[in-house]
Amino acid sequence: MAQSAGSDFCALEPTFGPEDVIIEGRVNVSRLRSGLTIHTAETAEIQDLTMEMAVEPCLKVFVILEGGIDFHLDDVPFRFSAIRDNGHTQPAAFAVAIAKPVRLARHSRRGARTRKVNITIRPEWLDDGGLREKTCEHDVGCFLRKHLAQTSWHPSGRAIALAEQMLNPPQLPPIVRELYLESRAVELAAEALQALNGERRCPALNSAATIDICRAQTVRDYIEQRLGDPLTLSAIAREVGIGATTLQRLFKSVYGMTVVEYVRTRRLERARFAIETEGLSVGEAAYLAGYKNPANFATAFKRAFGISPKLLRK
Image 1: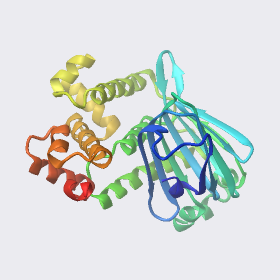
Image 2: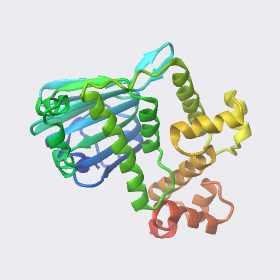
Image 3: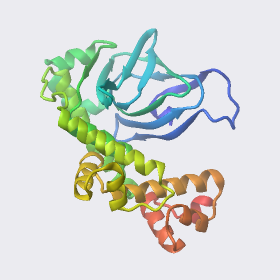
Image 4: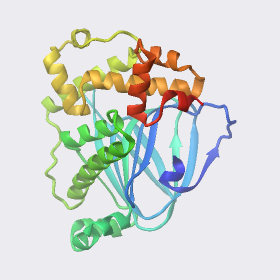
């Protein structure tokens, strides 16, 4: 996955063996059409680690939902993080222009937890859409030409919802999943370019919007901690202290799917991980995902991942 984000990847320090656990959580790198790459991560760092790779000219857009990232581009340090405000975490957005090849060194610290989306936009993507020519005389063009220029802005509520949906996409066939991710990446890129052009039409979230996002995140955290338990909509609503109808509305507005769809998706992902890493049988994986009938599980699994659990296990 690192090679998809750059080239000449290596871990600088310390030295680990092949069985050592360095990071836990979910990481995905998707290379979409030429020049557009999406990197999503919801992780906990288990070890201190410095990783390095070569990065070609591009525009990097970050939406940090929780935690932060620490890296160097050549000898220039960067530190981006979400904002803590009155006990709540408010997501933040950043952009960095890389106008010439650089070495990127990422520094991870044990115990750090991060939820983020990173979109890498290469010059050829702008060229394919005729965007570079259109932006060359505007602030965007100046920003892209200035090596290691950086900016930040308050992401809109829509941008935060898009980032959450990219972190937790619904069960879709692989080709549809790529289109789903790309559509959201393009919309996020549009907001980033708008911010680079000095058009601050994406104001900071008001208190009501912040509370709604925090409520949706509380529901998600509750589900994640109890994926192995029986879960009903009414029980979840009761535990988090909001009505079932409000719960559904808030959750879908942020994550792009219903609570039931989210639970089903995450349980299938957990079952897939167990098959890949622990060699669970199809029946055991079905039970882990909450299916009483292995055949129904196999059907849902293939629909979600494009491969049967039996074939994946082999």
